[in-house]
Length: 119
Image (cartoon, rainbow, N blue to C red; front, side):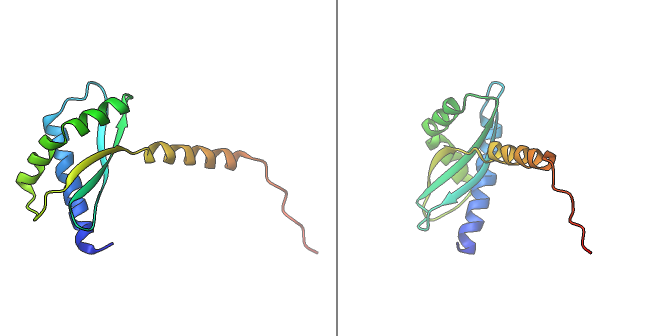
């Protein structure tokens, strides 16, 4: 991936996070922007959102329903030739990370073979 695309991804991630923090109430859920992936032509962006506290489908549908408002707020601060169309998607990487850590803990507790003695 090009360095320019990486910079645009990070800039959009920061600005979208700010909009979600300032302009939305989530009623007990914690909503975070984990990553943004912009297409090569900068016309579309996938926004991966982590949601703690349940109701993931409801939050994602609300974000996709209000993507025009969010785009407008973000593009007032970010000047690009083309305004990418934002599409919000659930990101379960945190849950997968916790599962992997739990599996590693279980493996660490398994009995091990005694060390071989060499003569």
